[in-house]
Length: 192
Image (cartoon, rainbow, N blue to C red):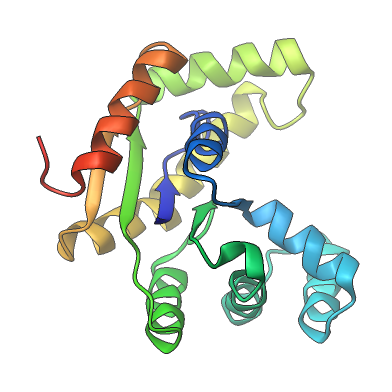
């Protein structure tokens, strides 16, 4: 399986992606993991990424796709992978398509966890209180959701136009959402 997980902050991507990847026996690759690994390995691409990360800037799309290329070229990705947090822009999605075409691969599933904003805000505020996360305050949550709508929501439309987007209701218990995901992964786009 070669899976992309999409969804807004607080949708439960990390929780569900880790479980799906473990069941499928494939690596769960998050944007943060990719950046840290590339920087730690000291590769030329990692060094370029570090320049941006060190000053708190977003890593440009061309650098991100090179980091993804390096990560997907590792042996543990041979049976498949789950990308969580990438692609974040339509430009990254198009670059991922080109990269996979070069590797003679294609995505098997593009999953989007769909959760209403009021539920997301409630979850993120609760997580902020529980975990003490500085990015889970009302003001920061509002900005994160705005940025998601502006930059990342169009990625869903990109995959929907290709007929590969599988929307999943992300409201419910972890187990209920996991059951919906398992069914979607078994049936693929357009399945029951």
